[in-house]
Length: 158
Image 1 (tube, rainbow, N blue to C red):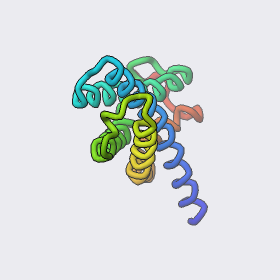
Image 2 (spheres, rainbow, N blue to C red):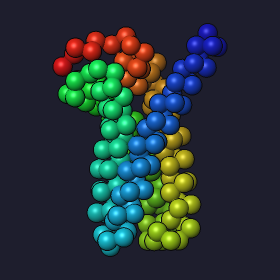
Image 3 (cartoon, one colour):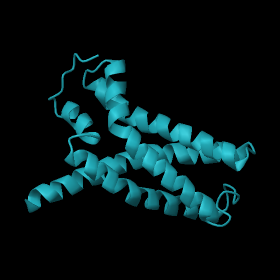
């Protein structure tokens, strides 16, 4: 039983780190672009969220395509597996950035921006971990993706 719990925690941590990678790419790219071209904070946050979903979905879709799923089958698995995790991470990450004084207006060369981003992503990881753990325990979330990575999926789906 303890080994099962450790395995579930390990899988949840890996799923959350995977999600964090896509979200971090999107957040950093969105905030850098928004800041560099002088977008308002709200518009910058929207851009960062859109890019986070894009990169999060992309990082999950590519291995499924490589495993033999069609594009639309891969997307349907990824939407089901990653949406709640990415959404949780994005809400928490952006709220954290919004409440850290000066974070959104610090500018790209200011350490306050980068330190705030690290804090926000760490807080988002902590928030998304139990979401991923719960989904995995129910055979949902990244459990849907894992079956294709280990060669047990129906590659003709979709």
